[in-house]
Amino acid sequence: MFKKILIFIVTIGFILTFCILNITFNQSEASQTIFETFYINGIAKKIGVYLPVRHGRVEQTLPVIFLSHGYGGNEKDWFEKGNLAEIMDKLIKAEKIIPTIIVTLDLSNYFSNSDFNGPFYNAKYNFIAHILPFVEEKFNVATEPYKRAKIGLSMGGSFTNSLLIDYEEYFKYYAIFSGGFDGLNITSELINQRNKVLFYGFGNDAPNTLMNNYRHSYEQLRQNEIEFIFYQLEGGHDYKTWSKLLEIFLKNYLWK
Image (cartoon, rainbow, N blue to C red):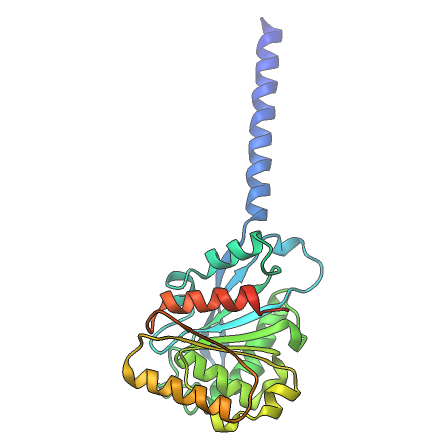
């Protein structure tokens, strides 16, 4: 009788140990979404971070995407409205994209009297001088331009465009969804001769004022003989359209 009880106890202990180890293993295999706060000149700034499956087990650095929201949004929008984590998990599992870290920015105080005020001047400087070093120090991200991408929608697309003009050497890949261009300042030399990948897309059911801006920007790019990838989807000025554009860009054009 005692022997049977002992065998039963040992068996239960083995099963519990296996379950605990299995749960721990599965957790280490899952992707993660975390949010970080840091300070620039005493002002709190926030970022969201998507960490892919097995991010802690990879010795080499991973490519990185910096992703911007639109006016009135924040660093959580792409996760809560744009299904960012789900899109990445699906594409990585299907081997449509290599494991990639994504950092979402908070530009919510762009129009306030903060250090992000002005025509993106301070925003661009703080991004290069503070956000990039913070991310590179804390996470295992690549620093080579060909392993970096900048993506933004609407106002965040305009921010991406502004970075392209003034700090093009930091990124190889640029994608702008439903964002305006200062197209006359983007030259064919900036894109074509420096081997940049530029993606531009929007939904065809956006308000007329926005559609006029999109079409004008598109024509400017064509007139300047700039090589770019263009998508016009059925959809509006919303995350349903932007999520589709993001998946198209990630799956077909990024890190190629």
